[in-house]
Length: 190
Image 1: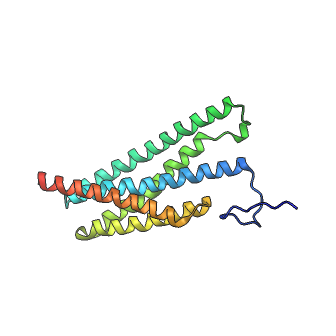
Image 2 (image 1 turned 60 degrees about the vertical axis):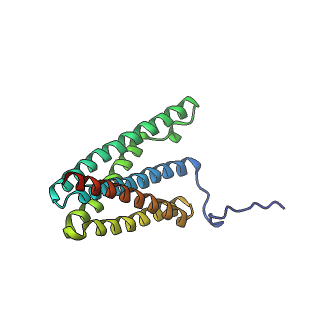
């Protein structure tokens, strides 16, 4: 009688998964979670840094819009180049065409998920009262990162707590750094 040890994160009753389908799903998941997290963190860090330097709304709005546009394009292009290179390698190893990663799918998922993630910090920083916009944005960002980090881990079958801690810690570090720089420049220039 042969027994196999089950992976600790898998359900023994789960249906078998086609490796090519799983790779495709995980590729979309990775691109989507990375894009959303990057949209949340990079746009929040940008607008918090500018808001720390000035109480005026227009510079915060302009910097935020520039960060959203540049970030979405950069994420989509970066994802396309990365996945296209991997697909070229797969083809050179004669992997079946239906199993080759699609760079367009990854680019679209990454770009749109960046935009989706960027909406939260933009709306929060612009709609919150001026005196509270930085702490309100920081709290909203931490909650959003906990949700995306947890959802990504859950969908990918990874430990949720570790993923949430990792993504939230990175977000807090980015917000703290840009706040400090913005506050220092605001004092120096103002």
